[in-house]
Image (cartoon, rainbow, N blue to C red; front, top):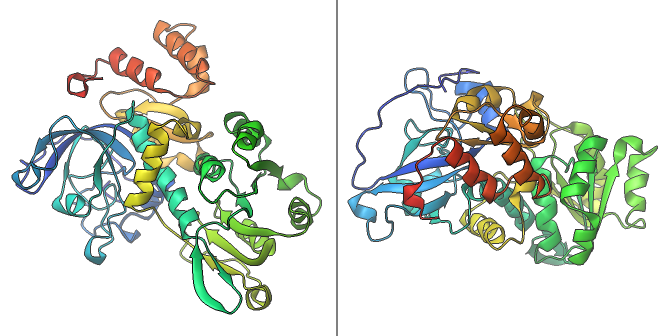
Length: 419
């Protein structure tokens, strides 16, 4: 990235790594709306260096791969061939520098990159034992939702202590929750230690609601002891009343806002229960973004508002463990797959592309393609016919078998993986 909406696919030589650095081969990166915000803002973004026009940064921060070469300082901890996941929210000594935003040689949308010393010092480079790279890439966005739920807090009247996390056995609402990030949050809410009694997920798009119900069904949630409700607030005559009625008038102990829309945040504020906590999860690009807040309820009903950005190492470890053990399938977030050459255009057009997460594989070129279009492409291309059959065998979702198929098809050398 050289500046505002100026992303270029270029070939360049990486420098030799230092004794305190690690060389990695990148296999996958899932594209994040935060990178779109970076592209829109350019130098104005808080994480972007001011000299990107002459020293461009590598974009992409939801990436995974293998270690190729290890500097002397880290050779007792890391070995070549190790598959890894990484936590991009570094916050190293108060700095906002992060991979995908701030580094010339460190990011995810690239064939190889160099991990600087601060990553290893912070424990942000960790082994991943799952059966595919996409699960490690999607661990980062899932960890953001995990972190948001851990950061919620509740109190008892007259006791000056915050009880961290979702309210045990409470009512949770995820507003605008049928997008890719919301689906990760819904899945986690149904299996997390807080065991909410009821999870309500709102949206205004019937197609998105239908897909959400398909990949995270009400029946699946019930098996985990959760009453899951999908609600289209656009069809409610009185959205506040409609949402409150779903809780028998109690309201919501936890409210997560997953779209940066003032009206959605205001509705979320209106349905808070006593001691309810509302998290504004979806980061806006408008620095003046604001919404009305009921301060009467804040005073008399002890409601509170907070926000998080990203997760921490523990959140990522939890996300990766859930994926590796098959408790959560992060593929529910993915609707498109492409190669390295598709990244720049897809990133700059993310808000205008339908569906969920766009997953990029960086070791080959391929247009960003909807999984639901594989069948149509398969009418003339035998490979896409096989890929379509593979995904349909997995409920229409991307899967480890499909990942291995696509590597083989494009001739990706995976010798170091020892699958």
